[in-house]
Length: 148
Figure 1 (cartoon, rainbow, N blue to C red):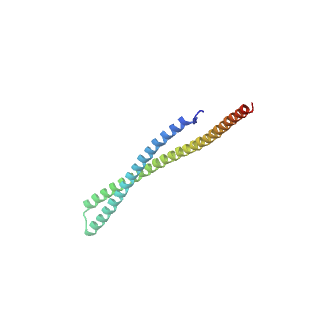
Figure 2 (figure 1 turned 60 degrees about the vertical axis):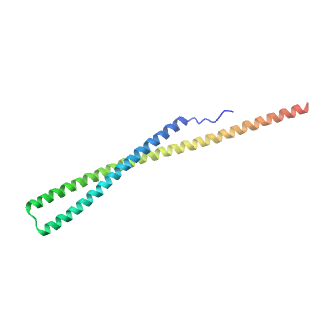
Figure 3 (figure 1 turned 180 degrees about the vertical axis):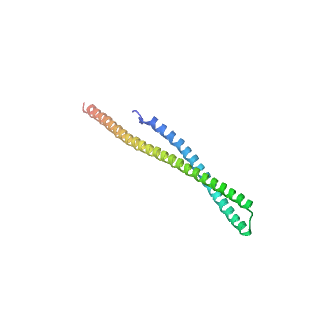
């Protein structure tokens, strides 16, 4: 009796390897996204603290030079925050793209699993038919032998 061979086994193995690679890429993209999210939160906190400090200092009175320095500093902090927001947005897009690819591969693997299961069930039906036929042949031979 021949054993069951899934004809798309090689494709299944390729898709499994691709899924593992994409899962690694997704986790990397997710980690980068989390780093940018943390950086954004850090910069938001710094900017809020420095604005508060600047406001308090201005209430005490500042020179024009100090005001220019504070203004330039806050402007630079704002630019860094905007850059972090843009990088976070790009990282989110990449993460979403990787997640989509991973979901697609997962669906393909699930479809291949179902196909393999269907083919295996058909194989079992065929094996059972052959076994039943072999048993009937043996019984028929025994009956013929017993009759002579």
